[in-house]
Amino acid sequence: MMLTNTRPVRAPWVRAARWLMRGQAVIGVWLWATMAVVGTVVITLLDRFAEVEVSIFQFSRHGALWTGFAMAIIFCVAGIAAHVGNGLTRAAFVRATVTVGVVVGVAYAVLVGLGLEVEGMVYAANGWSHVGSGGGVGDQNGFAPDAGLGVVPGLVLSFVAGQLSGLLVGMAYYRLGGWWGTVVLPLTLGPIYLVGSPDLTTGQFQLLAALDPSAPVTALVSVIVLALAALAYYLLARDVPIRKVAS
Image (cartoon, rainbow, N blue to C red):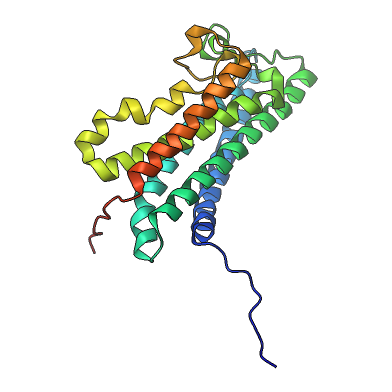
């Protein structure tokens, strides 16, 4: 009787995605542990020496956005040569990096929402005001810490935009070089600043906020921007020349 291997064969992009996810998980653990510790220390010091008047964990959204953006650049630039060098296609690399970017963006958004929920319970127990930074970026962009998990949908769009923008920036520099990579930064950074609005409580500066679109319109525009960003990334990467790695 002939024995056959029934183990499912994973698509190349799935293997690449698993590798990327392991790297992102390590960074994510350090990032969120650091922000949790720093937030706890800041709240404790404020309670001891001043007053706790606003949410501290609200600022984690900036760390999550820009860390995700930076990691997407690093994994894109550092990973493409190794990926293709191992006989895998550029298309598989694009699919893996975009998928991981979406997963990480969703995970980070959920973690911010859960963090705000926990912080809100601590604030309520101590009689502190759990609000956005008065008169600052948070209030101007409609970010409401007391919404807790309600901030998740808007942050998903914002964080995924950060991931895709990072991939665009990284691939643009890899393919076009330092000069042209810098010239096109207004375009490759565009997803971060075009996605979201005050109605989606992302807390980021949005170029479209002045138009005051409704939440459904904003969500639709945001999804379109994200789709176009993914398409632009694919067009840059699909036949990108692979640079030799110095030994």
